[in-house]
Length: 306
Ligand SMILES: NC(=O)c1ccc[n+]([C@@H]2O[C@H](COP(=O)([O-])OP(=O)(O)OC[C@H]3O[C@@H](n4cnc5c(N)ncnc54)[C@H](OP(=O)(O)O)[C@@H]3O)[C@@H](O)[C@H]2O)c1
Image (cartoon, rainbow, N blue to C red; front, side, top):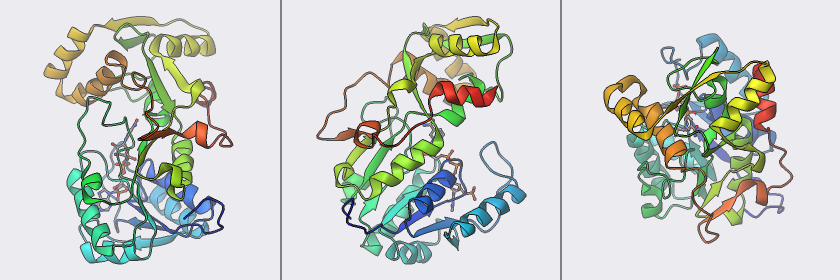
């Protein structure tokens, strides 16, 4: 599994139809890895992150067209996971953060399969050692070779609402700004996250490390982001600044917004995307080690929303 030795590892994506994982499946196939995607047999009920049954069918067809092997099943099927794991070198699951129990099932299957050379846990958020959001890291304790991906904000989750808590579209005249608006957040297009993730699988430099994705042009404060958008649309927005006290009150009193606001508190008040240097013994930065990957800038992403 050395870069350049001509051997592309076999990749298994568990939950290949998710918001991020569909990009990971596509990036893996595009990079020439023999790729399998484990998907559930039936489409889930509609939710913001789930696809309709027709778009799901189209997605699965696009996987087949790209040469991806589709395995039908559930994370709860231990024997299937072990069998799929034995036919793979690198595994990345895509269950959402609250499905920690699902990740434990995957870890148990990987341990039994015994041959996995790289496991990419489904964190895909902030670095848990630095962010003040606790995520268990059973994988380290189990001795499975891993790479954690610390990709900061998914551009596709946050930019289409201009980081507005609880919103489903772009603001019209008014934006809520958590904190003083001067702390930077880092945005990364999902397609780029997938490309960097797949590059990391066969790379010894990322073994048992955190791969931080910090595209230099994509660190923007909320004030800068709003100004950039204002310039594009040619009008100014009223900015409503929420103090930390107000954010904490809303986290306590508005359960429907509490997760969104807790994340925004971590990023815009604690500064968890940018408040630490990457320590080389435990982490590497993606755009530094893969300078040939041309990433989408926030500016370009906002143009798509016009
Ligand atoms: N940094 C950020 O800005 C950010 C934003 C959002 C999410 N995240 C993190 O990124 C990761 C991926 O999130 P996401 O939003 O892409 O997830 P998602 O869209 O909810 O996808 C989850 C995937 O897991 C599959 N799955 C769930 N339970 C399963 C089971 N029992 N058996 C088989 N498959 C199962 C789902 O299958 P179905 O398609 O059949 O439902 C789906 O494909 C999570 O850790 C999340 O916390 C980060």
